[in-house]
Length: 255
Length: 298
Image (cartoon, rainbow over all chains, first blue to last red):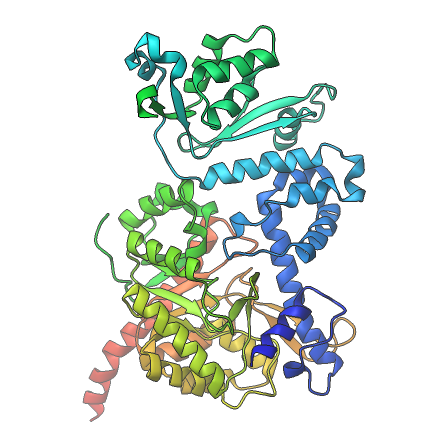
């Protein structure tokens, strides 16, 4: 009995694979076409799932290109879970090494942004702390303070203006006037009901990454300052809280 | 959270994110709503916020599409526990799944794949249903499938298989009338006869949906007619006829309009539900009139 679903499953993603023996008896062309309905259902429903998760990538390259890329990806890396919003975590890496996408070098970073968006959408809900919460921390322990960041947070760094490109395609702007030499860094999170994609000022990515890694405020500020000569800690701290990034302040004695 | 609402013998619709706002704004007079379990298995975010809000005003049923009850592999323990958490959280009036498989060897195929009907598959399906029902602590409904191929290794008819599943596992059935027509056309059996032979006393819910039509010949428009369970349009007239036939055996049952692809606007979907509501009340009326008439003529 185990052999039946082995052969049925093996034929689903391979158009040239033979029909499962339990179905084919006689192997009439009509049976072949009946089996192809399953093949088509599997692949086209997964293409639709990827399209729902990566709508901007699809708009950037067009429907036909997207279908071709998705079909190949589905064969190489079919879903491992029935939760389709978890499918596609490696799609950006796939696009990066997909030769036909070479003429759209920023495509994989747009896919990374869309993946971060989707993760934030489904992430755990947690209340963010307001900036005023910092007032409860004694001045002298401030440098040693650490932060628990929002579970929906992803940080992105691209050599392309990925956020500007993503927003221009989403808003269907005809002449967005984007400077393609300008890389961008972004924070993606959902502190409340809506996912927010925020461009980060210089040093912001290093600062936030350090905090996300559990470094102290002083260590994170030092890393931010290494990234840019005019790192303004007060400005970054304010942004950190305004975006709703912080869910807990961990005092030094709390380890 | 309010107490679980049982699902009334009225029309409901499949809940889609595209209709969240319309439902909350208009509060339509609808018997109930059905959500696909897998769409609400994320940790948080808008899906839970909307389902929680809608759950305040409407009875909710949960319909699983990814449990792979017909799988030759064991059931996915992680998925079972996610399902348990979801059922505990939303306390749905009904929980249903499919007589099909969708995962194999760790891959999820996102389609409801067919299985042969034999003693071996029967034992496996019953064992999986037992596992689900013990974990959830409640009865589940099993849905009859729509299929495109059959297996020469099958030794039982689908209806006998379903009857045996009910008697061994104690589960109920979800009668998908569109699936009956789709399979009947695809395999050349009589849909009305299938409805008449269905173990109607075990049915706790009915599904209605639209299907697409194609041919299995070499070129377009040749070969045998094939129906595809597409859920992408209005319910076919023949399905409405078969639905009334099923209701004449069962009496009113919770009846769901499933529309999952090429989604219509809310008024179009609601109109389909109202049509089902009309068939349901027609049946009620007839049931009320029948005894009086028999008495008059008796």
